[in-house]
Length: 125
Image (cartoon, rainbow, N blue to C red; front, side, top):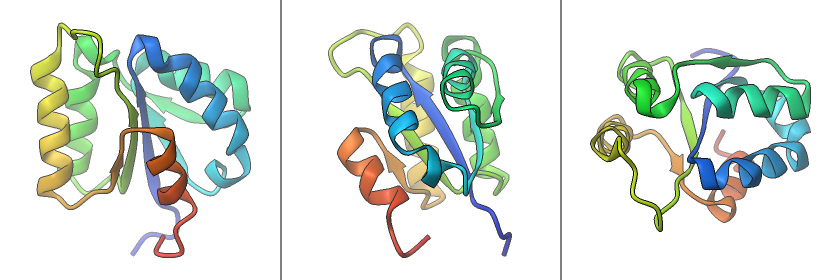
């Protein structure tokens, strides 16, 4: 079992500010993880927190699929995905596939701040 868990960070456009705020508030906890994320989200979180965040493609350009592939390969241990349920997404099938693959591989996936806080503060990690 690897020492550091890998956490993927994803946020739809209308949720990016919320993700950055959450990441800054939880910077110390996040520093215990290897971080990755989709395109702009990874860049914004890295800039705001000073933490290293490996960036994949933007979600609509395949980033959600890349994160899903890393889950299937056993390289991602948990996901924080602030999705926007009120905005239609052009890559909605990719979003559903990511959610599905996280469930298939029994990966915790937090889709809001409350759940994300529970997950990263869990003694089970």
